[in-house]
Image (tube, rainbow, N blue to C red; front, side, top):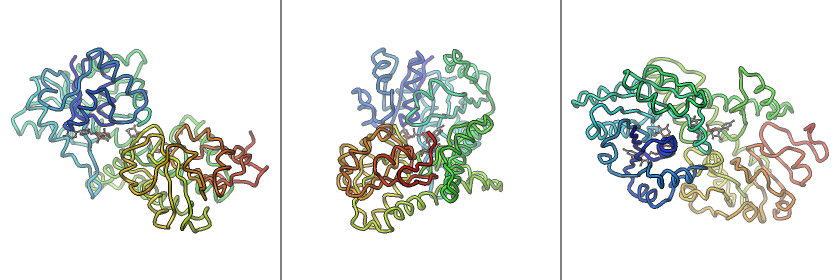
Length: 442
Ligand code: UDX
Ligand code: UDX
């Protein structure tokens, strides 16, 4: 089985490399020549834990190659995955031009009988429309849809041990080829859910919209906790123990970001509106998450006495979540912008040393470690839940700051830990009690 993946972004690269790890011969194609050159030199253009080792292992074994010419990449392939980006347009709809362009280029060069599988997230009906688009150009290609459920930062693990694999197919041939491709997962009894193209496409949007709604829900419950003295972490644990609810995606924070939830909720909403269907919960989720960022900036301002002008603010973590260098739609962008507009002097430390972040926050200094950026700080703000922030020596940190104020928008500290460090603490959905009176019972 010869597999080609077109697009070596966060999804395409992980998918291609993991297919090679399954034992298949894989060609990864990207029109961005400098990315391909970097990969061929042994570099990895994205930060994704575990990916570098799998790339070097499978590259050395001759199962993985990287090319920039689509024609060369798809020649002789039995199955070709499309994993190019589907960014949001200004009206919220998904921009599918890269998908159509890739499909046409692939179909022109691929072998007869090669299966084209769309992995990019696309509105319902797109896979069928791509097939028709190709037919209109005289190319009779078999098109399938196989959504990705890869969380950045845990994408390799998610690929190798998925909860399920959704496969939208229209032919026995597609079902046969895709069964072979995902056969290595049988060892974990992973359900392969074969369905039609439209159901597979909608399953992806519905899954991400539901998870986004769960996050927005717990964030609103966090607000309520702050107003009545309850602890949102404990509420989430109590809720999550009910198997009907589940314990995942109930971590309160500064709001969801990333390349998927914001884009997918808005594309789903746009798609439904076009059909006259009112997805009121999805709409409200989008609105609630947008408001959350503004409220988080206000929360920081309020914790700083409603005046940050000239104050030194140390920001720990700016990527949209931990274990990635991805800055797409990160809540930190809006929050830091608001603080800068209020005259704060900001310093940033992010463990990914993200090039995207340096570009976005041009003019704002970055430090080499968490402690240095806190020297002389009037407030320390945790925006991303990187593991290394969980074990900061708060007493040492307290010795470095000007004013011991820790604003933790990811709730990574327990109230008692902070109590003993001498910091004043502000988190989400939990009320900080005076020293010696932490609410926790541990
Ligand atoms: C993916 C999916 O494709 C998107 O639909 C999903 O919802 C999220 O994940 P991602 O991997 O994050 O996107 O995209 P990105 O990091 O932008 O990578 C896309 C890659 O495709 C880039 O490297 C780009 O150079 C490449 N590309 C794009 C091509 O090779 N050919 C094209 O025509 C367009
Ligand atoms: C998401 C999907 O989960 C994944 O299946 C795939 O479709 C790609 O999109 P990703 O965006 O990489 O993955 O990360 P995810 O872990 O889903 O987090 C999304 C956002 O929600 C992040 O900003 C994260 O910080 C936030 N989040 C997540 C919370 O605030 N609380 C939670 O409990 C979980």
